[in-house]
Amino acid sequence: MAHLSLRPQPLGIFPPPTGYLVLPPVDGAEEMCASLLAGRLPKQMPASLRFYALALANDRQGAWRALASDPTPEAHYNRFVLRSDPEAYPHLRRQLNGDLAALLDLVAYMGGLTDSPPAVETLRGEVAACILPAHAACALARQQYDAAIAALQRAIEEVRQVSPLFAAQLLDHLATVYLNANQSLAALRALRDAATLTAGSELFDLRAYLALRLGMLCQDQAHSQRALLLEANEWFQEALRCCSIERTPDLYALAHYRLALTLLALAPSGNGDQAIRERAIQSLRESLRVYTCETHYDQWLNAQVTLANALRISSAASPTEHLIEAVRLYDEVLAHRDQDHDPIGYGRVLANQGTALFYLGRFDCARDRLIRARSIFLSHRDYGAAALLEEALIEIDCRVSRTENQELRTENRELRTRN
Image 1 (cartoon, rainbow, N blue to C red):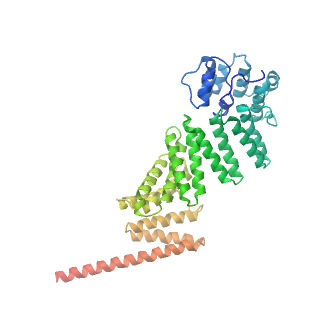
Image 2: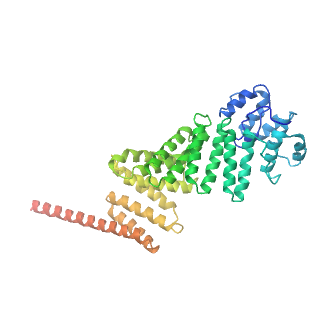
Image 3: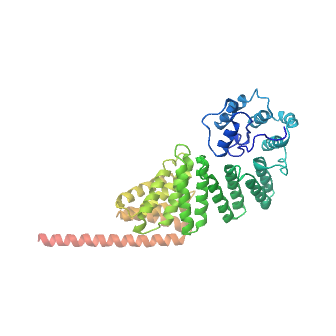
């Protein structure tokens, strides 16, 4: 068989091994190809294409069995994709040529059965785009960034018109290469292009992932640039529109956490920003539905501390309730954070808790936390942080002194009244 008779194929759209499978030219295959290329998963498939439905459901063995009695070249190739038997490869390679032979060589290379990816000079469309990333990976292994970028750019152009969802994933790959080559602006352009290509697709998890990644890159590159922070905010919200806590809990939690950080950066202080800070607090609470100390320790720690800090600076209608909750959250963090492993981080939590206790009027507890934090900072030569705490301790002493003087004057007035 020289070439695939059904083109374009939905190669590269779904994760392996499904992303390497090809559809044979049977009744209903053209319609199914069109649906898959658009990211739509047909509710029903012809019996002759049942193998593909099983592969989509991650039933690799079931998909292989569904092809067991099919003598067509496509079936031989698909069985090798699902079960890459090293002994079957040489025999199968002699049977196939053209596009299928190139794809077979790619699968063999990805499985470690050959030393180099197949040539792509004579290949076009989605077949070429499927193989070119392997050439890009080889170039990256040799630190040849320009060659890797060129290979991926050609792959993208091969499928931009016929398989935009595949092109979007190649653009995501290209963005990673750009970032590794310190070309962050090019990475942003690639991810924006990828997000555009997935607009309207029913591959919601892919759209959510790309939106999340784009938002994170905007946020990381913002450096207080409000325009990029606003763009990040939009992408995080798009990610949350496309995902759910039930289907993709980690993506959901990360999108909420990053959204909260963006909102807090957009509303650092001032009563006019309180509504934005309250949205950030809500997103942090959502992230903590997934992040727990037992399952996601580092993420839980960051979200917990960020939530406590947001509550501490909040100017909500019930600030006392927020401060009490912040103190409790700090206690939970301190109970699980290792002072010996991260003394400065531990000291910051103590200092922030001391500040919250100060605002609650619990001056003795506040003084205790701030003195402990100051001691940690001094022992690790963070003199700037220690100096700030020294100012806070002086303020506490002044407040306590004023309170005591006020109480003494009140007692004296009461005594004079009784006399």
